[in-house]
Length: 435
Image (cartoon, rainbow, N blue to C red; front, side, top):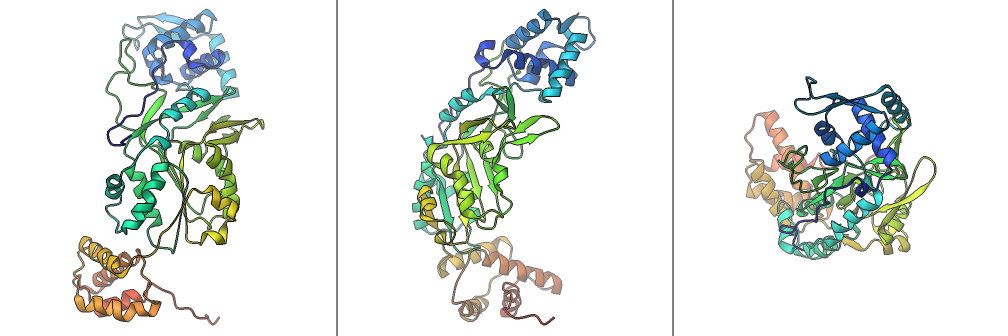
């Protein structure tokens, strides 16, 4: 499947109330809570708020009316236009308050977990196929050896876990972001899912980049919705964590005030990428973090727990990328390494690639290069660190020289003196400080 031309099968809009496969009392209560919390009293507005087709919404309105929880106001209401307007009865208000005391969730109707699991299969990260051109184009801003692309391509295309390791400052984070950019298709993220009567919010505008909205009016009786509006069409998500990652961030997040759940990071990244950057800098030992991923990585499912202690399975369909400055043998045992499918070492650039990076950065930042200064840098400075080059160094040195030029009122032109002053800030001298 070519990611640039293929489309993921969209979740079809439900045609009947039974297709929701949700507890009827829960569905009705979400309708009542939404009417109670939002300033809406007509079917089309309510349908938009709960993300259901108008006919199903009308069926729910009729159900609530038959139970004495709603009453019709007629079509003469100032805000209703030609539509029938409705309001909660006293019994309906009491039921709404009782339902809100159990859960503050209202608005978009959730998707049953088992139904969502089927959609995950249709848009699985493991279904993608990525070409060399796609990956190279996504990494176009980076200077990388061909051998690295040779290793990255199969790793990304497999949708399996990846460990990138090597010295700091050589672009592991940038490469991870490039992998994210290479995934050009769209998937469908549920606004919320339901399990055992509990609602778990999944869609997060911080994590998920929504595609342009469908121009079709989602409230029309006759409409041609392309997909179930309980989902949001998004680019494949990317979650990036660093030293702040802890084990409890991989559990359901329960709000005791609202009595609602938020999906953990790995569930939000379903169908996309989960990047664990700076592995080894977290408070938790790396081995312990990876142990948490063993079942998900091997069985494509994760196990979460409700406040009650009840445990349940959710799909785990995520490309996990671990990035570390440590050698893998220093932080993992062999059992953990065996479960990480691809191990890719990211080395510093050779001198030729270093000069390419230096030239690209200088051109972008309008720093005029000087041959004598470059020779001074390569022949005088780098031998002091055994000619070990890193990808971060060109931008660091040029930014330092620009800052000096701005302060001194000098033109942006590289000189041996500027190189010396910039170099002095790149490293800290190993010495004892007398107190």
